[in-house]
Length: 146
Image 1 (cartoon, rainbow, N blue to C red):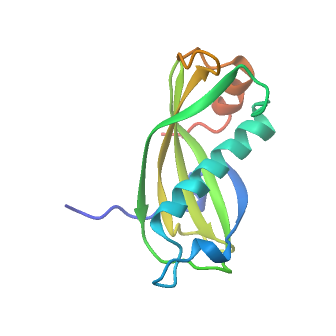
Image 2: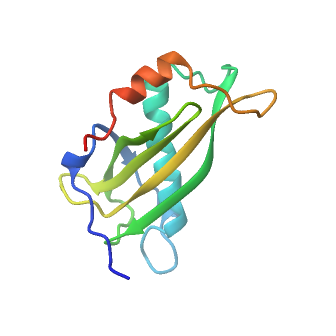
């Protein structure tokens, strides 16, 4: 199996700072692999809140993660300053697949990258719904250019 190549900053359309925390480090002295998924979640939801008008506390619609994956290229550790990059790989009727990468501040090659799939659901019923128009418009703005 061939190893994928890390993403570049130019592959992404939205960026958000990520603050590492002391407890992100594991016994081996670097950020633990599961922590990257929290970073992915933070970057995607920051975009939805800031640009898609998502009210995480009161909206009838929420995004559930149904699939994710990550490739790791080089270690990071507290107190590294990071930047999360976000784009939309695929946009469906009720779901979106994001491409997400983590970069050390000031660097152009990802330390990790992967994907994250949100399905939008009604908060009360947990049934999938069509992506709300404000969110869809925001997602269209960061679609991957092929």
